[in-house]
Length: 234
Image (cartoon, rainbow, N blue to C red; front, top):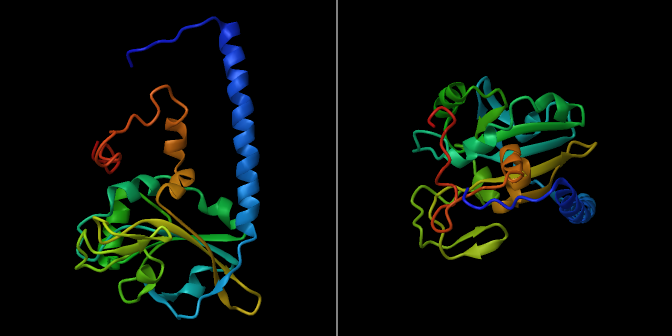
């Protein structure tokens, strides 16, 4: 940090109040967008997905437990990978402890990856995480929700990601979050998905970093998240 813009407390307060007005505008706009999100139409999930869990196979319906809403974090961990994605792990460090709060709002939470449980479980233990995490290795769930492009994917292969065609995507896996709802008759519906920067709001660490003078201070070129490590590897 090389530049210091030091002012009196009175001048700072005036500038802060001006910024507060902008922040309140943003908050109101976010509330409007959240309301619009809740009004999105739903799409029936017609496939009977079966996932591998620590205690055997589970269906998509099973992942809801007693809840009528389900949030899925699409965690990048391909079958051939030896560890989970560093960026996804950065997000997952925010997940511990939220389960009971989500439960109280009729929401179940799970992370889903293509890697088999024999890889997911030890990595989860290494990271000290307690959230539910299952494998979609034996089904097309990740591909159907546009976050897996096949182990033979090449960067120049076109993919559909973040609701648009991409002519270049360097990874065979992508991250995202999808939301599902279970109707009274047991039918399951896909209600929402978000990808890329749309996930920023779910990362508390980024939110705190954004409050500081340096902000994210990430590289202007190349991968902006090249600074991120697994939390036991800094």
